[in-house]
Length: 262
Image 1 (cartoon, rainbow, N blue to C red):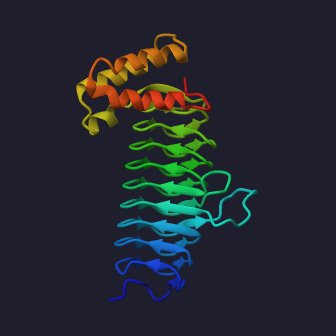
Image 2 (cartoon, rainbow, N blue to C red):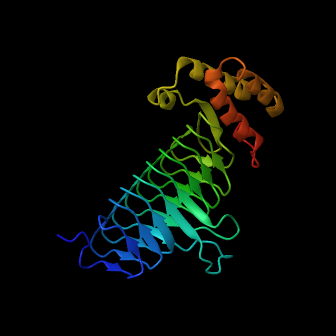
Image 3 (spheres, helix red, strand yellow):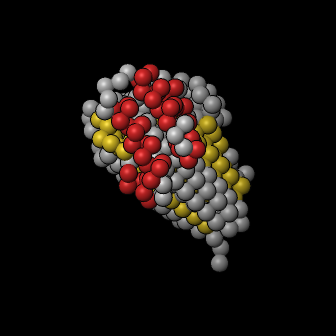
């Protein structure tokens, strides 16, 4: 039995692994590459310079690899790259990058992306994230690994969401969200540490204690950001087990251009 429905329109120049499944009325453009085991649901349009990895599942009515919604875009051959084992639900829209950035929109692996999610030009989404319905990422957004984003959340251009963070329902992200934190609301507020997520990922008690101490230094002791960073760096000396978590937080704080949610 053919894995490609007879109503699908696939450009002869497209590169599809022999195991790719393509549903009814799908349209695939000439510069598309799709890896083994990926399934494309009915009525999806995949275009642009788009590379998709292995074992992804695209549900119906997706728009993948369309030109960026940027008035400066002049038809340059920018890209969309998607990793492996992602589940991408109905009506998602992922755009290619622009020459104002690296020219590539990237979505990693093992993500669960629900219906109507929009990923704009030049965004970078990490691995193992859960993104709920109608979340919208404006251009140049960076999202770390193991992030949870609540439905109807809007993320402004160039914002960053650190690894293991959790964003509550219908939030307005207009500041960088540090790793490990739970935030929500409009205006945005930090509610605490993402303890549920850390427990699910089997963080040790030692690591959780250090992360909770980082939260206290940032949000509970009336310190300036520079003072908080001094205290956070000192935590690395308490145990080799927490060095990586401290380094993750320190790098994030040091490189924040928009300022962090506080």
